[in-house]
Length: 241
Image 1: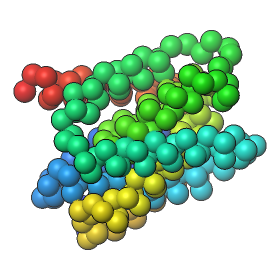
Image 2 (image 1 turned 90 degrees about the vertical axis):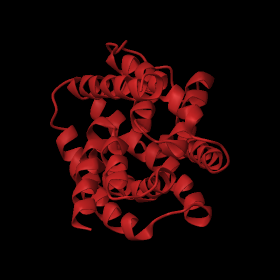
Image 3 (image 1 turned 135 degrees about the vertical axis):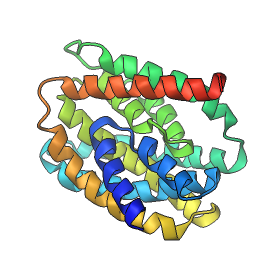
């Protein structure tokens, strides 16, 4: 329990700062002996508490964004539900093969210098992209938050800390809906989920305090660099090993 609590705190901080919680927490669950599918669904259930902690810790960044989040939230929730349904009825190999490419593209999008203008929340392309990446978040999850971050950066020219706070809410909604489906129909290990969730809650609350202190666009570039590293690692595991 202490090991999973510590992994949850670390993953919660990593999630809210560089959007890569599952890269820490999913291997930790595997290391504690959970089968891959059980680890995946247990991780998604616990991840809900990262969103709760991050929302509580990001109130300054989220000020004035309530209406926008209410309009975009249903898209993220529907994507998360779709991804959860796909996970329960399809083999994970398909997403394992496309995940490195999706993560690499999202990382490169984040690494581009801000253009000075966003495409807006009403653009069809941005909404479709948000739906697609939240399907991935509900299905597989690894670096899903980074993809949501990249889509929001495409839609809005907000400061990186504000985009990151919005990403935490959108990812949290996708995870929450997916988690509900897994809680009802998936093989969740509740004994592992509880301490992991407690760690996620604390780490999610701490992460925004770190993110808002990073200078300039360094948060975007740090997330992009970590995402590219993850894409290379997942690509090696999927195509070479």
